[in-house]
Length: 249
Image (cartoon, rainbow, N blue to C red; front, side, top):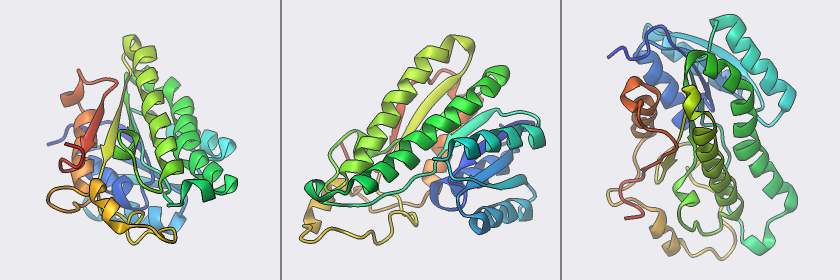
């Protein structure tokens, strides 16, 4: 399939995990991908993998919580690629704490990256997406839909992303811009691998966050992102699509 021939996709968090998987998937279907990540070496590796497979990609290091850096990033994408047809906000961080022990600085940092970063990227990209009648896919989480033990800061940030995405869908839908969320659950990524758990955490509680058949790789989420970003998702707007192996069923 070449559903993204002639299209430009800007993807954050593209240095690893779901962001990298999404970049590889959209590139394989013809998109020119502007890969963004905090880690320059990681995002350069994603670019190299895309080019090795015959695709087109650019690499850009950016802290998505930095307003000036985000503005420069989006402008660089337009300057280099000429347009933006799709924005995937996959950059994010995760930590676990007993809620009554969360330091304000730690809570703030999670919100800055997961929520503010998504907000800033959307804000800066929307004028360009309106011009192309493009679309946005944001990373929410199953933690936005159900309780995540010791994940108070992360859950709060992802719940806000989900609410914000629904607002974007309603506000800009008549102008031809779509906005949706993926809600991954039990996906094997570097972010979720061996997280530091708080003292006294009962790991049996984590069963509520586990899929029926165990964790899957980030490519299963990338496939859903590709569907939402393509014409196949033309009548899907303001939705949250769980990719969690029936974790919450």
